Amino acid sequence: MPARSSLFTARTRLVAVLLLVSVCSCEHTPVGTDPRAHATLFRQGQELFLAGNYASAAVAFDRFIATGPSPPKASEATYYKGLAHLALKQFPQAKACFQTVGEESPRAHLRAYAHKALGDTYFAQEDYAKAEMLYRNIVKKNSPDTPNDEVLYKLGVALQRQNEWEYAKLYFRDLYTNYPSSRWRERALKRYEAEERLFSVQLGAFSTRQAADQLSRNLAAHGFPPYTREVKQGAGTLFVVRVGKYKTYPDASSLAKRLQSAGFATLVMP
Image: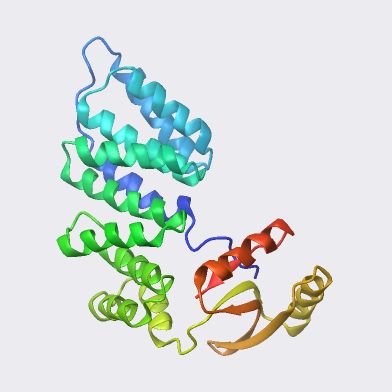
């Protein structure tokens, strides 16, 4: 299967957040506003977001905020608008939204999610030092309002990408030891056990050697020398196609951007 272009897709990781925050929304609509029209406008923004129409979702939440909702509802809409901007990789707008919610929301759980989302924004920008700082604060608080297992995983990845390999292992171990049912546990365990401390760019993982060889020929034709690794997965074997081996993440990331410009989907490993 082709490699994804990023570690995390916004839509899949945020659906649960949308539902969780919405369950907590019990505010009255502003005086002079038709409650049904007000609720419809807010719901339209959520539905557009979940459908992957992020630009229209941001506009819908802007329209909702312009109606003058109560402060809790305004914060909630601003948070969702930030998620839409993050999905569109509009990082300055996303950060502005999350900072506003983190400072002004009257809801503790929404402030907690905004702080995490701000960390995710820096992570997506590959500003791992700032992401690390935010994630570390979240781990220290250990709030029940945030997905601490995901934060531990991303904190470990952020540290690895700053070449803090041994320090990263502490957080991966914390995750796989204390969160046995976490969906991040197996990923953390693989990173913890990884022996090679080099970064490469993965282009695909295939169930047949033929498919891997086809991709390898295409890469070579574009001037990128590939190599194939056989990885055991369950009862079968995956043929993983990669390019490059670098001591630093920025070097591998630079190669990934050149590969993307040539039309290839990439994933920097680890």
